[in-house]
Structure formats: C-alpha cells, structure tokens
Length: 114
Image 1: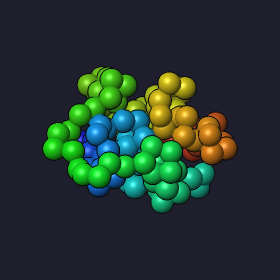
Image 2 (image 1 turned 180 degrees about the vertical axis):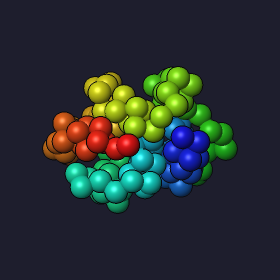
Image 3 (image 1 turned 135 degrees about the vertical axis):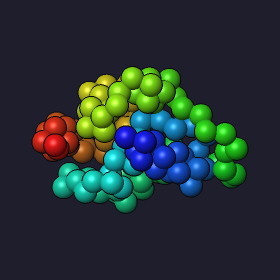
Image 4 (image 1 turned 120 degrees about the vertical axis):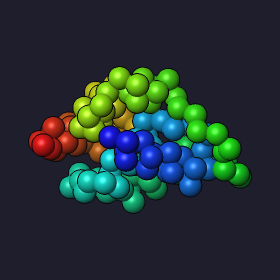
C-alpha cells in the first residue's frame, strides 16, 4: 500500500500540482496494474488536460481531504481505488466521467483483483 502513496506523491511532484488527490492515487494504481479499460498514459493525459500543471514543483506533499482520509483509513489498494470510483465527489471519478470512461467496467475490473 505504501508503494501506491509513494507513486501518487511522485505523480503530484512530476505533474507540478499542489496536492495529492484521487487522480494521483488512480494514476499510481494504473502505473502498478494494467487496466483494459483505461491506460496510465491516457488517464495522465486527461489529468493534464483538465487540471493542468504549475510552473514549478511543490515543496510540500499535501493531500486533499478525500485522499488523506483514504490514506489514513484504508490499507488495501483495491479498497482504496474502489472507494475513489464509488465517490462522485472525487476528481478522478469526474475526469473518468467527463471522458466517457465506463466507470462501472473499471470498478468491476478492479474488484476482480486478488
């Protein structure tokens, strides 16, 4: 599980964004596991297209309230990502929705992980 957060933090830094959010957690998941529904590169492109990036990297690792809650209370990668996909208040969910990605199919795919 720590690997997921470490990669999510690296994504935040590399994308020059000010916080680790659900979108970074999903990016980390997609980097670790291959999805047939959406690729890491495709989702990363959407994150940059919709959120953009800053002109400089953040000096601090900050988490959004939702990402912080997940980090502090969920200790299973599958459960963490399913909680993101099950919450229409997360940025990751709304990016997927806006791009026409079948969230139910992605949810089912992740739910089959052991």
